[in-house]
Length: 111
Image (tube, rainbow, N blue to C red; front, side, top):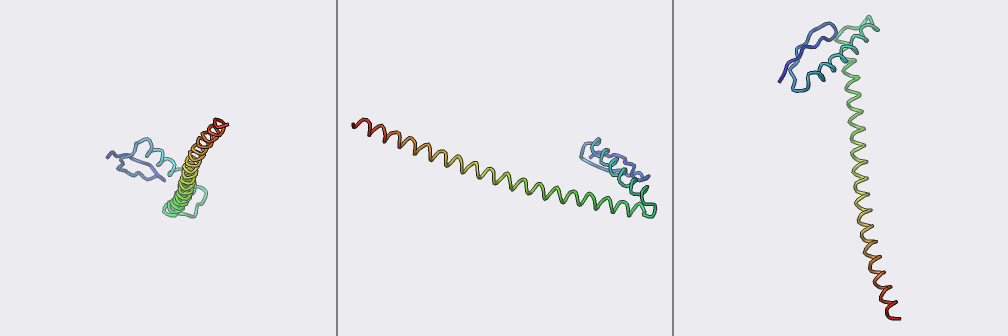
């Protein structure tokens, strides 16, 4: 586990992470920007209140992303099932075509 120091809303935070340090630094920068913007635009709120509002925004985005991901997984599963049915139907049609071709050849040969 590596450590990284983040500056968020004027406070330093030492974070231990297994993630890429550049990635974590960018997350910290994004969080600092959101909280700082809230503090700048709303002089009456505290850092804690700005952090809660920001956390709610992130939680909302995460929940919506989960829903979208689940819908996509369901859709992909349905497409895979449709493709499997289509392959089965194609194989059945191919066998029927072969059977009918042999039958036609037999009828022509008997004339």
